[in-house]
Image (cartoon, rainbow, N blue to C red; front, top):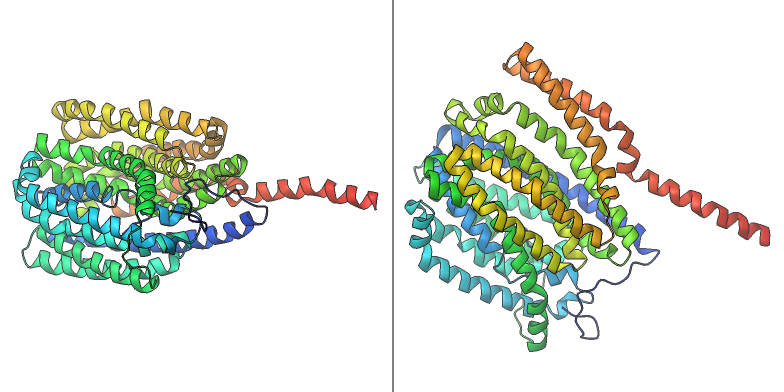
Length: 516
């Protein structure tokens, strides 16, 4: 349950401007961020591998494309509701200066009230929503799965405290409890014949475990209260962020709505599987980074130079780690889908290469999103997300009718590369992060990705698609990629920055010695 969304200072005044970074702060912050990032990465990798194994088990032996389609509809609606369930005020716990326990009770009251109202609305509208999305069978699943909205609205405060303190070790334990319980319930119910409803009850069980875990890990944070001035300031801070978050979720999930309403449940099932596969690199690497990136960027927002360096390094690490996974899955889409999920799911492989390209773009856009939020550029963020959605909807509708799920995937990439990336680059440049920082972060991974693609295409023709052949192709491609990105290792490790600091500090010490 990723609930990281943030009122006032010690004097009672509210502010959404971060305190300027001091000279001593970056070192301490860097240690916290590195420690949190390690825990977050371990957490995400373990959880995603578990989800991956569970998905294979269910797709092969328990659920077919139609059930996955129903689940896809319910999951889409849930994600959209989660993006607005606490009106963006939960980010104040992470973002605002001062003691968050002063305003946490008001945050909790606002979150619980808004999430309760949202759930009441979706409960009443579930049959209509499911019908409009081309999946009438999803009505009951919607009503159960969206109970997670209420649980998330309550959990946002303790989870926000954990994010603020970079307590990703505790988050790993909580997420493990969530995973074990949700997976156990889902698998048992799926093999008992509950179909897509097994996903719904599994999600509810896991979110209950996460709520309890967050409350135990951040004791004393589940206290309701109300302060009118705090509530007004929180809503002023949170509503624009909630709107931007809602737009961001709409961008990611509008394709599911288009496919479901245009092509039907079975095609939606294939598309959901392909989209989930394309999300493996995003979730494993980007999700781990995003648990610390917002808090980290918030601390650096007072120093444009430090922010640009921090963003460039974070982007370089993310892209370097993600490109090989995306290229491998794109180049070997058919063999991987057939080997992992079985031949009945091969139609999903046709869309996967395009969705992998989209996943790579999304990683950079999500990091830029966190940076813009942390630096207070809410208007720019809202405009970029709005532009993305407005351009995407008509393109996906036309593409779905012309070329099915492959057309939808191609339309996604077309809009993202042609419109959204330039818009994000412009917004970042206004905050002091120029194109040069972006190019420096992405240059070597882009070269490595091109070399990998050439190796995969060349070897696949000669070695075939057997299991050993896929391993040989993957190993060779990874070796080529590693050679290409080696020149960027100092930049990724931050040693260039540290060496630069030592060089600039040396003359100062020499001058001081001469004067004495």
